[in-house]
Length: 103
Image (cartoon, rainbow, N blue to C red; front, top):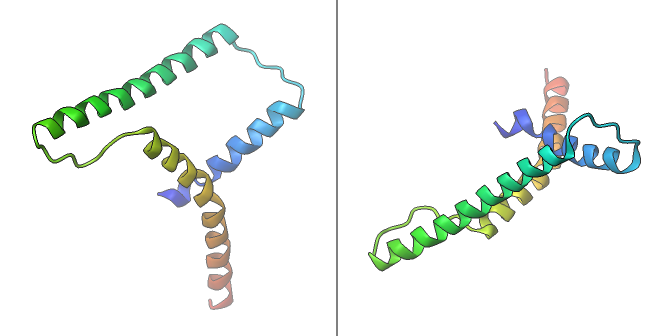
């Protein structure tokens, strides 16, 4: 399903540049948006802390932890999102060109 949503990385990068260089005319409460982003960040840190506590608890009981959640994993998944988007675009273009050439 990566090939369905790869364009969102380009959208977010483009939206950030647009927000920096264009006149901003947003129609939402900045307090509400800040509160929402603060809540999302707190929940994200809560997941990392809870996973770290669960990991130490499970190692103390000699349990097998299948997946570990850490800031490294979150950072790597974000990198994968932004790095894979141009590669997927390139592969879609090349695949379409090959299809048209050998049809």
